[in-house]
Length: 630
Figure 1 (cartoon, rainbow, N blue to C red):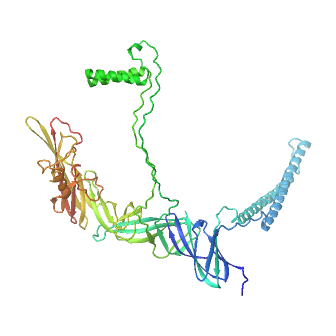
Figure 2 (cartoon, rainbow, N blue to C red):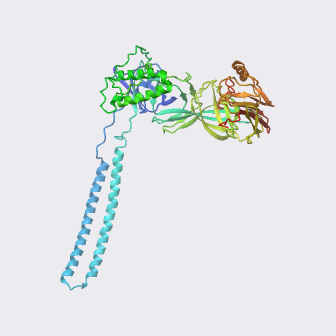
Figure 3 (tube, rainbow, N blue to C red):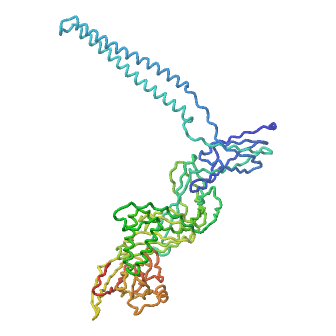
């Protein structure tokens, strides 16, 4: 059938479009919907209803597939329907019923009132006309008739009250039903109107893209699983995402992509302001001080004419007496003159002004961290209802390069800490997020993974490992005195450390950290006896020396030795100076090693084996010197 020119074909699609994909960002989501429809030759007006109320109007884009042309796209909120009138057939019926019930209730209440008045009147008549305390013959029948009538009316009143409550409940429900979708304050869904022109009638496909803001988000979650019995790949990371949305429409069986990019709005290039400098101009001198009031001590103090003259007199007096009285008397004289100045009530001298550099206003520039915006495609089809709850989905299972390491500090505690040095060998960027740590299938801790790009690394604490036992007996000491003219006291200390591996597998990379005292005074000498390590660099206090050194080496030689040389203590055990606080995965054996008095043993212990280490050091000082800190 031919259509007259200028006629517009109206097509109403409703909200039955199919969501083909969703891209979720940290605070929004991009939704793509597909519609298939038939258009007529000429102008077509396609109306899409039911778009979510969280939609960003400026983000709507429309693409088409087929032999037609898209002319314009308009997004608007549909006009609300006018509110219904306050009356309806049901409300009128309930209103009439309520009026009838109320009238009947009032009538029965009046009957009860009149019955009570009749009984009171009869009782008063007997009291006035009869003998005192006389009981009439018909009083029994009178009371029986009263009780029967009042009981009947009371039952009718209760029945009418129940009926009235039912009618009121029905009226309230009818009011609520009439106001359910009008005037409730709930946001309206958006509506998109698309103008399409076609040369002839054909089938087309419309792709509608829009962004919902503040109604969708995702956060990374991790499970770190460590296996102490495996040497090949002891670490596994399960990468998860917690997705939640309350956009107003369910995402049912759709492919979901997780985005890490954060849109930036209103960003412009910063401006570099001019940095100006100038010659410092001192402030003007303060006004002259008022003359001091007369007193009997006025002749003892100079009479200043102002702040400048007073300060000049004070300075001249100091200069005149500096050579005679010495520095101590000069300071005392300054105090005397300061007191004299206070008695004169002259204003206090202004604080010395320091020339400070001018502050420079800097523009705040945002950075993207590693400079990588990762995109994760969740495998399979996912359903996320619009309920605002977090739904966990698995992104990937990763097998990163991992290295387990054990750390013991006998002088801090007898626990052995297990850590994992993890290298992200996958193509995924690990976003910062919480992680749940499992050791040999047992939950041990909760931790956090920092932002880590591909080939980046981080350290994860796995808690204490009870299968490696640390034994620390009390340290022993002995004191000796030497010297003929100058007596010196030397105290020797010894600390034994035992590590027992109760596992069924060999333990590599076990570090034991200990320390000896560090002298802060040149009168106290600390010497490491065992393990026999190269002497640390010669420096100012703190001072630590080694038993293998007879003279302090140069800084360069000591740096080279302490940075590359380790001493074998036993089979599978080496020791060297350590620089750090123990939290690092590997000791920093630089030129500063030894100056902090820290020693590290690296151990490789076979299954069910035990390793013993000994730490010996001497502390020497004059006999009469009291040492604090031991």
